Length: 138
Image 1 (tube, helix red, strand yellow):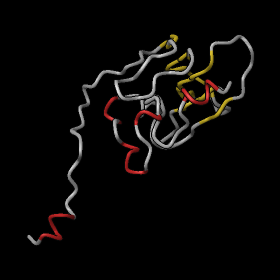
Image 2 (image 1 turned 90 degrees about the horizontal axis):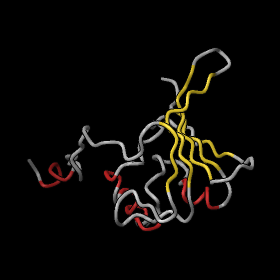
Image 3 (image 1 turned 60 degrees about the vertical axis):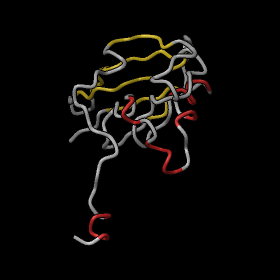
Image 4 (image 1 turned 180 degrees about the vertical axis):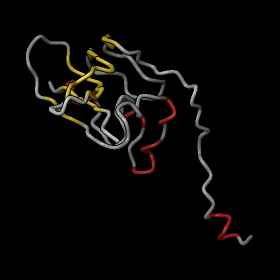
C-alpha cells in the first residue's frame, strides 16, 4: 500500500461507545447556571429548563419526540427549531469533545448541549429563546 493510500483510509479519532449513558434523563429538569456537560465545555450562562422526549402530535396523527431547552420563565418565548436528519440529542455527549475544533470553534465556546448542526441552547436560552430539537421522520 502506498503512503497516499494509507492517508486515504478513515480512522476514527474516538472509539464510539454505544453504552455511553445519556447525560440528561427523559422528563423535565432544570440545569443550573454553571452546569457543564464535561470539563472543557462552556458552563451554562443561565438556568435552563430541559424537557426530554416530549411527544408532539402531527396533523396526520403521527407523534414525534422532541427535546426542548428553554429559559426559566413563565413568559412565552420564541422558539428556534433545529430540524435535521441527525437526531434530536446527538450533541449532548462528551464524545463530541473537540468536534468543532476543525472549523475553529473550541469546546470552551460551546455548552455541549447543541445537536449536530443545531443551535446551542446555552447561548439562545440566555438570549430569551427556546430551542426545540425534534426527532424527524425516517
